Length: 289
Ligand code: GDP
Ligand code: ZN
Image (cartoon, rainbow, N blue to C red):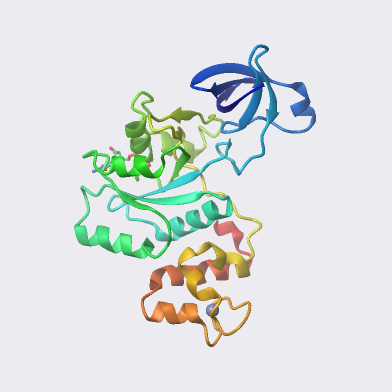
């Protein structure tokens, strides 16, 4: 048996990438019996002569809309200008990524439109997190080397508001694909393309890109308000030092996280949105996700 990765699946046939070659396979009937449907991104063992997928290896994560498995990086794209960044959405995307065992990459696009001060102020919001921050301009083809370097060897998907440049980034990374700029993500938003199947596109650096821009918010039903703090990587150095066990860094005295906000070691606006999201979760207002 040989090991590969499903890069495309249409009508019961799966393209499996094995050592640089694509082998079209069907799935064994027993998968369906067991309620397992092979997904793009699945690492599989195949019988290459009979062209059957024999085994699906355990998934690191699986996303819906579009369905895809084993994502390593979520490129969270924002634009310096046009549209104005929605940091509340960005913070939630970071949380979703972290919960799904995906490393967020903050991608600041359209730097050709924004002032250096504004770009700097956006970087400052996220520089205390552990995530890579990449500033790029699709228009001027700037910064893409750095992005390529960060995603090397991994599977990357892109998310972000409509119009931030997700399709443009995918096209620049994989020029042979040609996604319609300024069109696709809007259609997905309107629900017309919801049945679209994602495909993985191969990069020269060994990485792969999910060809569908605009992952919808991964809805988080399981997140407890008390656990929200675990997904704020810049809180980590302080959490253990709070006076009370189980401090949620809100009204408690002796809270080191709040102290770090006061001294500027944690950006205040990240903390303020943490409180907003904490309150939503506490009140079980998950509809806003
Ligand atoms: P998506 O909705 O996130 O997939 O965004 P698109 O890739 O469709 O881009 C939306 C619009 O922004 C298009 O008109 C693009 O040409 C434009 N755009 C994308 N990247 C840049 C950039 O770096 N600078 C400028 N000025 N415009 C850009
Ligand atoms: Zn605290």
